[in-house]
Amino acid sequence: MKPAVSVKTIGCRLNQAETAILLGHFVDAGYRCVPFGRPTDVAVIHGCAITQRAQRESLQSVRQARRVNPEAMIVLAGCPAEILTRQDNPAVEADLVVGQSSKMQIPVLLHRIDPGRFPPAQEDAPHTPHIDTRRAYIKVQDGCDFHCSYCIVPKVRGKPSSRPLDAVVVEATRLVKTGFRELILTGANLGCYDDGHSRLIPLLRAVDQIAGIGRYRLGSVEPLTAEKDIVDFMCESSKICRHLHLPLQSGDDAVLARMGRRYSRSDYLRTAEYATSKIPFLGLGTDVIVGFPGETDAAFRQTVDMIKQLPFCNVHVFPYSRRPGTRAASMPGQVPDAVKKERAAELRILAAAKRSLFAATFCGRQVCILVEKILSSGHAWGWTSEYLEGLVPARSTQVGELLTFTIVSADETRLLGTTDCNTSKAAGFPSP
Image 1 (cartoon, rainbow, N blue to C red):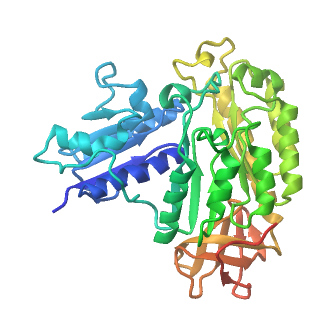
Image 2 (cartoon, rainbow, N blue to C red):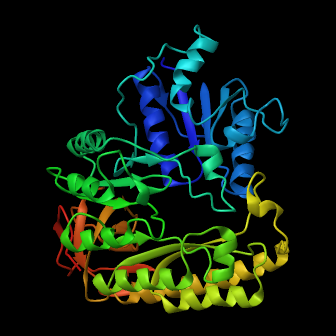
Image 3 (cartoon, rainbow, N blue to C red):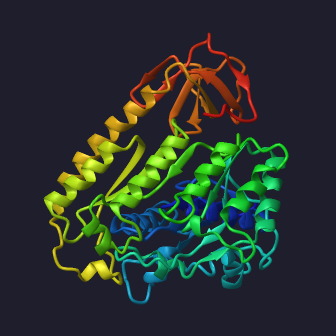
């Protein structure tokens, strides 16, 4: 029987995209994939170190894998491996710790360690991504040199680098021909995509023209990089999803300056207002850090005010996490954990209310979902272009279809259709 491999992915979409590539290498080397937690020969924890919580979860997952599969080869890969090793941190209980530059070579490394147990694998061999049956992630960029004072990404992912446009298009075309209906373009700093010849918008134009593509969406885009050009492009395209994730982090100028962010409160407001004026039903998402060093009650109120002003559909709230090796870790004015928790709870309540209000605006409008599940109730479930949940009676619908229908009501954050909705198996979705 083929050896088994399981992978647990923690963290961002870029990690998910890289996991798909890594599993493709394992499959090509002769492994079979099993769910994490099942009996396996190799368990890979593709971890995250962006926050203390994510790093802790990565190490806990290593211990979990060891308990479930005591005889398996346990591998810790990715960002945590750049700052943790078995030699200087006894909490790392993995058999193998592999950093960013070598993680795609894990099948090769395993064969070198134990050729009698693990099959041979070719270095840098072409691969078939082993990915979700509904959508595929494509890594187009990696690394960041913005050096925000709280962020460890430049340390663990290095300097910016972008894949050649032609290579991205070849991969995207192959995935579309395989039957994937939604592609997600990811990067550590996606708005700074630059392969030396083309920037982000030419890349989007090339992906947009791939024959048979259903739809595609973007990962997070840093303010004052390419977001206005992206919005203008969205007005032209019927394929790119109407969702823009634009990290705010704070609504206070003094806090933004201490964070090392490259924009002001007014810059962000202008950008968000431009985007929502051009695309009225744009799904606008954001990230917010609460309790950053020196964040006063007044500064936090500035952030609350920003969230109230703008029609966000998703607000991801993170209590500030002190990361060794970053400038913010040694800044004065560290905020007590209890205050961080209180502020995060308040913002999450506000975020839920904003999402409900945004969902309610879709009553009577058409939306398109990528069908991800057929529920026991007989409803098809999936995400809309704007990143809202959509539900509609399934009829003859199958998982993986792009389904357009009319919304008759919004239940908190879910958009609901009925059997009387006008449905079609669409290859795109209506323009706003």
